[in-house]
Image: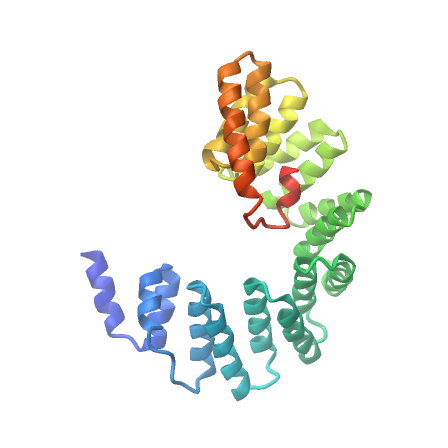
Length: 295
């Protein structure tokens, strides 16, 4: 009944308002139904909304086309250039994203957001020196920019300058002490340096804030295993695998824990599962920011 009332409510709205409601509800079928007819409008607001709908449906080319139409109406507009940059960035077209963000930086040269996004696109393009330069500029413009501080830590690790990562992760955590992502990355860094007690403290805080992240359980399990706390390690690694059944790194660690606990049958089955999952993971895309958390 509630669903019927919602659809009746939508039917009485203009198309752009209906699309906005469908996006808020994260209703793919509803968004697709409205965008089945391409927007015939000169309204920048409606074109931006349509672009967001296309992105929600992963129809990236149509999303970029909608923003390009908006930019024809308002050329050089900072918000539209940022929107186009985000679309290209999320579509994997980093050169086009960088071009849009550079134009946005001309329109608004004191915006820390545009330099942060430039850093992200250079990071995704694996141009770490240029990414670092733009994150540093974003942080100079806004010293409270926790995202730029965090990404400087991530770039330091990818650039194999691990000793430079800790101050940035510490800064990010100080700015956002309840961000589970920051806490986890900082904890993993400290574990790599052998500072397991402090690493566990940070990881357990992250786990409490976000108990559904398999990477958190995996890394806690890995540290506990290194400390010889095999029963606790098994529980964390089993949780990681339950949350992500084909998590190859967790399966490998769990097989080792089973073997050390004397459960050879489970160790063998888990190792077989690991081999299958590992082969599949080689062909799968992985978030480059989180990649270091399972190495």
